[in-house]
Image 1 (cartoon, rainbow, N blue to C red):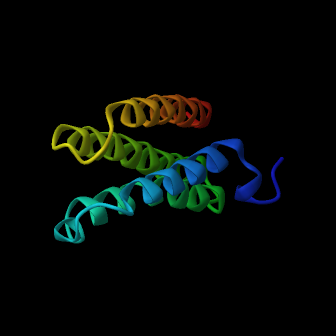
Image 2: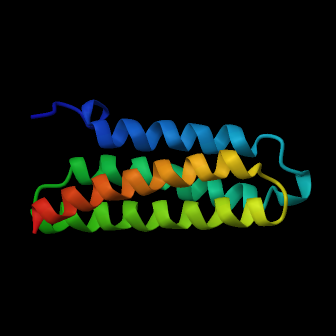
Amino acid sequence: MYKSFTEMPVWQKAHDLSLDVYNLTVNLPRSEDYSLTSQIRRASSSVPANISEAFGRQTKKDKSNFYVIARGSAFETQNHLIYGKSVGYFEGKIVESYLTKYTDLIFEINKIINSLS
């Protein structure tokens, strides 16, 4: 049993990925500050935020809802990564690596959701 959400491997992966995405977006054009930069950062940071919120909830239903939101944010982040690659902001190999990591993270979140059902 974990004493803190920070001990959870799924949170650690989500947190690390959100930092990766932040670093990926540091050099985006200033014109993207209120669109792609903001959207992808919010989506990626939402994943560990919702995992931590699920940790603090009491009921399985409540916990599950926050894991579902975290999973949705992971998919949203994948979409923004693909978009950034398509418009030439992000290098293909880096995006492919992050997409794979997010797919693995989504698999982990799905296992947690299924265990709560």
